[in-house]
Image (cartoon, rainbow, N blue to C red; front, side, top):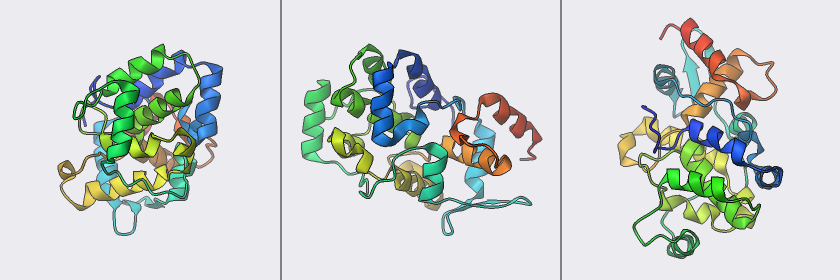
Length: 234
């Protein structure tokens, strides 16, 4: 679970905030990703994440915390905690030839040579417009860095179809995708899959359970995580 600069991680998303204009923020908020515009959870704590992952029961879709109770993991909970779209369309995570072709033209890369996640970050920093290309790039970047991180330093082409039509990004069920990858990571060899589980969600949902009065869970900061981590006997 080591975080690397070129791999997708929460800190990469946080680094983007200072480069976003108000118009760009409104664009992202209107697309349903408003919960990720003020994320303070910039660091993953490997031991805490692994403990939470081990506590996840894929059959009941619950975090079973010894001596602490159970936390149901549903689409509604993911939507509340992460503030990402819960549309009606399933994200299939399959290679789509037409979507790949469109994105190749959009980003100027050749077939089979997808851009690095860090290159998306640099592209977003340089783009001062609040246009469909910015929205597509931002959604793809958020997906690879926090929602459904990849094992690679490069963007997964399996996500292209979910963002290719900027007007329909909000219609995709990103919450279901978080749960699906969480289940896959526990049900078999995770390296056989294209994506890692959303560890940021696991950390935040745990603290939401621990501090139920918080109105905006994704804004938990690292200091609180550190405190909670020290209190746990893992």
